[in-house]
Image (cartoon, rainbow, N blue to C red; front, side, top):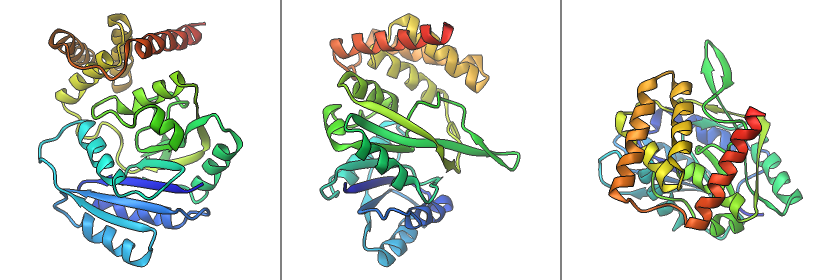
Length: 281
């Protein structure tokens, strides 16, 4: 199986060297890593170019985009730009530039894909440094494949229609994978260091966008409230609940375009409720 990894990078000079070192150190050598420098004003491009000079399987491309911060959409657009430069592949990955992978990461994940033809997505788990220890980044269930370490089988990636350009892209892809009959798997033994915890620099606009994503995934208002409540509880801020619900209602009244079809939405709501009842049981 050929593996192609795309790393969107905007001003990642502080983390990129450690990240790429962990790719170089893999026990299973990758076929291709594409670093997409998106309007960086630091030395991101220089660092990536140095690695590309040493390793012919690392490529660097530059993307010029608008300077405004666009949660979700900007990183997906940058990924899609890199995808245009990708060679033929069986597994396609969207990885962040602020992670450190264990050396056996791709060896283990590749084994899972080869052993299970229904497997559409697979990853390890993200850990953050807290009080000089690496602990699980507890903002999602351990069965959830997180945005910074997405690895898809090509058949699954194509079936779900690629990545949605907006907040929630890294949830809707999992739901659609299941809708199309694919399985997803996380490997707890693969502990990935996340050097910059999720939520760093989040604004009110980000949390409103999460509410909009609930609408675009065709959550009912009740499901949206439960998801917003869980998010607010994890962040220990009730204000985030109201921001998310405001975003949901805003998208509703503006009749914003959806991420999924009515049939897909029905499946997603049923799957979400099944998950909620199983936890309550």
